[in-house]
Length: 342
Image 1 (tube, rainbow, N blue to C red):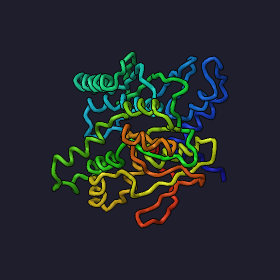
Image 2: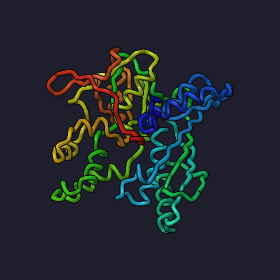
Image 3: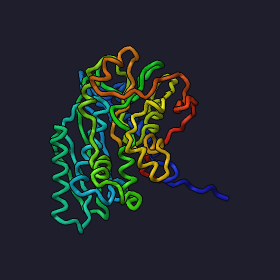
Image 4: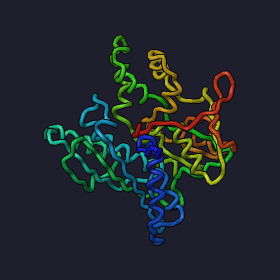
């Protein structure tokens, strides 16, 4: 019998991107604009174009109404998010935004008022991140689709990449884990939280509907000694740790400690209310938009308070993701995170 053909759902988003990038290597790259680090960046948060003393940093993201915007998200928040997800990629590489272009696929029944709210959200986010809106396009579509391409600039000797982590480095995050997941779970399971305080629910949900790119911290990181690698964790901490390990030229592993994970009490409360594993929400759910960084051990303390970093473990040579639980037992964790194709 003929073998069954695989579809894109079986591969998943990350493998599809790697498949695309593998094919892209068959096209010659102009050495004037693409050096070794540029080619390496093709599987990083954003692509690097060699401009001499600096890199032009280029990233793009596509958001669909059905996959990326919960029904509770208003049109202004949708506009803000398409800018935020792009700026987050620049933040991970320490790049200062130069501008963004936005392409919109618009359903025929979208009202002018709804369109204006999307644009207002785009403008608000552009102002927040000091990122000019420099162009775009619109077309009719069966589903509301927002696509952004953001440009940034970073000095060649300061750019941050996923690769670079070395054994002994501290691994840290720039903020709390799991709040976005908790917010989405409240939205998906409203009946379970009907007796919760409304202001508490609103504060948690805001993390899901109004994510914030850690641009300021990314720009501070590139000015700080001892930072060896960085990436954003919008697809989930474990997934991004796996990407960081895969990108390293040396075989590195990661050991994290459950007691060090900055998981807010609200996330524990949501997990308990739904009888879910809190670590699933904090480590695999995604949408937190914090940065994951590795820093030389002797430089970490001087950066910890300056940039508000939360140490979660250190880099090893094991080639595995290990987690020491609160009882002191070590578990091997597998890479997993948010996939747009399921």
